[in-house]
Structure formats: C-alpha cells, structure tokens
Image (cartoon, rainbow, N blue to C red; front, top):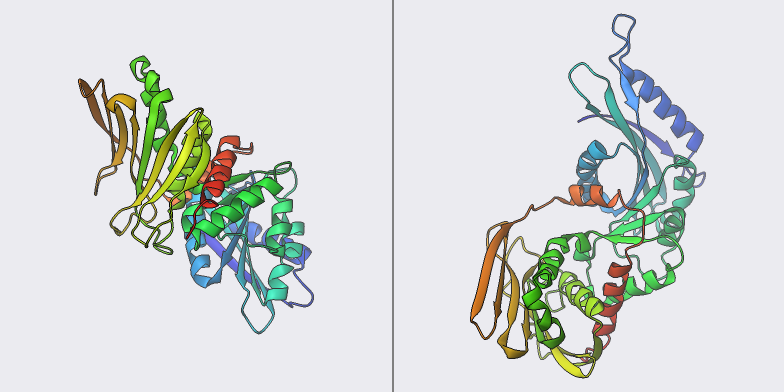
Length: 388
C-alpha cells in the first residue's frame, strides 16, 4: 500500500486548525492523483465509508497502530484520526500529521485511497482537551468508531468526550493491565452506556469459535438432556502476562456467556491461596448447585490469556470438552455420554486472525451485542465474590 505524509505543527494553546488541515489534505490529494490529459484514468478515488478514531499512548503504540491501519484501510477506506497521548510530558505540545493510504484496484486502474490524521498531544491538559481537535475533523454522514487501545479509567475526560462522538467503541480486554479491576470497570461503563452507543471487544471475537463449538454439542438431540444436569464447568487458561495472578478475561467471558445462556446464578467463591491456585465458584441452576473451576496452566509464550480447554461434566458421567491443540491452529472437541458407552471426538482447524483483521470485522457492526454485555456483567459479579 502506498502512503504519503505531511506534517503540520500547531500551538498547544491555539489548538488544531481544522480548516488548515483540510486545505493540506486537499493539496495532498491533488498532488497524488497523477491524472494527465494523456491518461486521465490514472489517478485516485478518495473514499470514506467511516470515521475511525484511535486512542493510543506513546510512540511505540503509534507505530503499532500505523502498521495495523494498513490492513484496516484495505477493507474500509476511511478517515482515521489517531490520537497519540503523552500524559506525563512536562511541556504542552500539539502536532498534526496527515497522510493518505492508497491501493490499486487493478493494473492501470485508479487507486482507492483513505486518509489518516495523527494528532500527537503532550501534557495532561492538552490530552484531556484533544476531543476538541477531533470533532471538527470528522467526515459527516458516515459512522464513527472509536478504538480505545487502553482501559478507560474513572474520570477520563478524553474517553468520555470521544465516546460521546462515537456510534461504537472498540476495546480489547486481552490487553487489560489489571484484569479483575478493569473488567469490573468495563461492566460499569456498559451499564452507564446502556441507552446510547455500544461497545465491542476484540477478545469477545476471539471466543467465537469456542462458543460455536460448545453450543454445537446441543445441536445433537441425544445430548440435550445433559443441559439440565450439568454438575461442573472447568476452564483452563494461559495466565495473563501483565497480571499472572489474575484470571484471564477470556476465561471469565466464557463463563459469563455460559451462565447467561443457561440462567445460572452466583452463590459464592472459594479464596485462592496463591498465584498458581485455581479459583472455584459455586453457582445455582434452579434447585441444583454446580461448580465452576478456573485454572491457570503453565505460562506458554504466544498464548497470553488464551483459553486452553473448556470441559463440562454432567450427572451420570457425561462429559463435553473443547481444547486447544499445542502448537497448532486447531481445536479438538469431544463428547462422552452414557457412562462412556458412546464417545466421539474431532479436530477442527481455525484461522488465527490478526488484530487488524479482527478490528476490520468490528467496523462492520453498529448494533449492540446484548449477550456480550450480559457476559461482562456476570463476570464482574463473579469477581465481586472473590475473597483474597
């Protein structure tokens, strides 16, 4: 993909001059069109199907986002507005960088191009007010997405202002620094936004294959009786690299999804004695009690926070499981019913999608995911029962 970049620097006191930036972009489009009287077909098509606001902290995150947007723009030509924050800087500073991202539709055809405006804000006061620089740069009459590459903590003025602009907010719970606190905070944010906007979680998307495979067990009529006789659920997961003593958000979301779908309620939890200890929770399904066990496994590079197995056991010895095959992009499923008299298993391949591909998929969704919101709320309540 071809890119072209220009830099415009503004005073932190005066803010970003949107008209000046638009003028610079127009000049850039004209210079990059390449049209001529001899071959007017060679040029660019300026396209914008959506606005994508991205919040990131630090230059390392900025480089990561720049690379990721190469993937996103191929599928969604858009105006990307990247806000790079340096809240701890002593000197207040505001800079803007503009660029176009183009791809050829076919040999000799026009290039389809989107554009990116990067706003680098230094100093806490400048960062908090960065939304005033973003708002006038949004393209009207197309959806607005906010990808917040961090957990929005309490009283974050920038998150509040940018999320008010957005039709949908995208986060990734796999990157939480403090999974227990951050997931509880996420549940609160979802509750506060229940009447406006919606939130997507890239980590929820990573659970799609697992949820589909678990649900498919009960597409088999002979297995359905086990649904009302479940005695235990065991989820094993690779510990989060940033907080190895806490439960991985993906594992908590999986339990939240199961409990929400099956109408389970929380009774309590056992205290964990140390970082490697499993967490045990007691849930209630009608008049029956069942146990949920969340067990960290050995930490393996490249599997940060991933579920490695999910096993459901029911009365009479019936068992259903989905497991990640080590060092393979494959999931293994198995069912054992009738006291072991009937046993089946299969191995399925699945595509390990990049973060850019997952974000691209989320940019096609504007509706609320009520099931996700309920799963987060249940996970937060589960965490609230833990006695350290």
